[in-house]
Image (cartoon, rainbow, N blue to C red; front, side):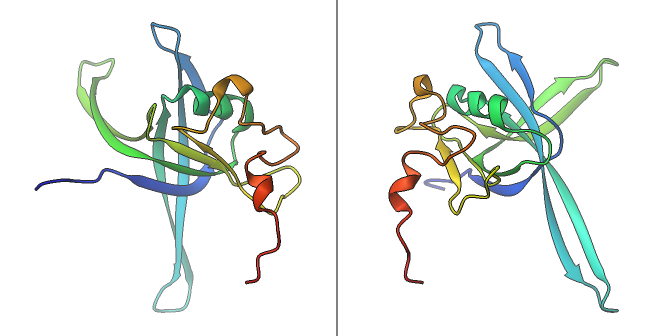
Length: 158
């Protein structure tokens, strides 16, 4: 195969407060779990639901800062990253495998879909160009939308 794509997009709710760790060189690593649910009616007309849990790891420092400051249990998130499987050994010496959605330094995106004021626009943070980690959350504070998103608040005719 000449090329391939490893891209995952999830919209779901955070299952517990993010776990923030630091690597040996002092960089933040954020672990969180995101639940996605599918609902349907079975043959008898009863509503059924299936929930899948996804492990998400954030290595991007800008997104890690946002997750640390604003993401908590129950937050609705959009995450975009790639799938990675890693092997590890548990305390009993048994090798195990874990598959995670990774938001890396250049290819991760995250959007907070909840807001305190239920704004009409989502707050999006990208993992590449256009995000200035030194200015905090791209001009976003906990009571307003991003400076970039306010330019699109004009009325849409559809």
